[in-house]
Amino acid sequence: MSTSAFADSQHPITWPAGFTAAASFTFDVDAESCVIAHDPTSTRRMSLMSHQSYGPKVAVPRLLQILARQDVRATFFIPGFTAESYPDVVRQIVDGGHEVAHHGYLHEPMQGIDAATEASYIDRGLEALEKVAGIRPVGYRAPWWELNWHSPALLADRGFLYDSSLLDGDAPYRMSVSSGSPAGAGDTRDIVEIPVDWTLDDWEQYAFYPGVTGSGVIESPAKVLEMWTLEAQAHHSQGSCFVLTNHPFISGRPSKAVALEQLIERVKGMDGMWVTTLEKIAEHTKATVTEVHTHARIDVPVAPGFGARFKPGRVQVPALS
Ligand SMILES: [Zn+2]
Image (cartoon, rainbow, N blue to C red):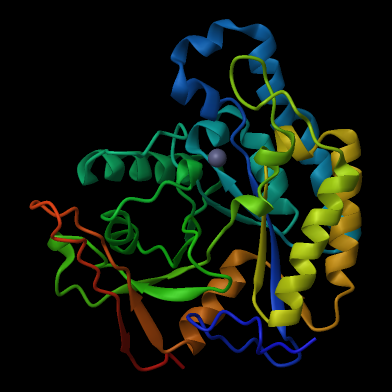
């Protein structure tokens, strides 16, 4: 299959010598945090809490065994609250050679919050990872992938190398922190963005808890394995970046974990596929990609019929050696 016919022309990238595409297996260790963030009274529900605690208690050790057996390093996004609740699990992840990255403190809803509030969440998450495991993460994934226009500058202020929450590409790229934010005008800094996709999130396939999440349908791991294999093959053939997002309390259950290991074997077997952490992919992107994207922000017109204003932009900057 020709690579050029399918490549992400907006985000060109050349992979390290010997590789023609990239893949990363990522795990969002939400545990109880994502449920409590929506409804603090969830803590009164013993069964619901047990559904979430299955992640760190049972699934993470199983997933770490799989990753060790497959000799694959993964990226684990861990909310600060999870880290404080399960410090030994964080240390097991670190001991396995995996990357630990930031995922909020209590998996806070980010929609509509101001920069100061969001900054307080990020800082509290940073403090928790530092306290529990002495980790200063370079990667961030917004809870529910909900980035705000002011978020990139907050991340740059704190020295983050990359974010992985946007959905507008097949390959990593550099984005200006001034995107769409009047306060950021003139800010020349950028961070790496490694895009994600709901197709490659286990939540849509498997998540179900009555009255909390899901439609009631829990898909067959055989179907999911086929779907994700097709996605990996397409990324491989077009030279882009396959990023799978799994949640241990979902994909760490028995048959799903078996299917995930089969997927890992298949992806590893793709000739020229660089299977690594998001940190490594971000470092490579920062060092080799010269183009910086400024995201277009669409303004709702005041006058009817005026039409939305749309100003995309890209600039060239020197590569880091
Ligand atoms: Zn999450």
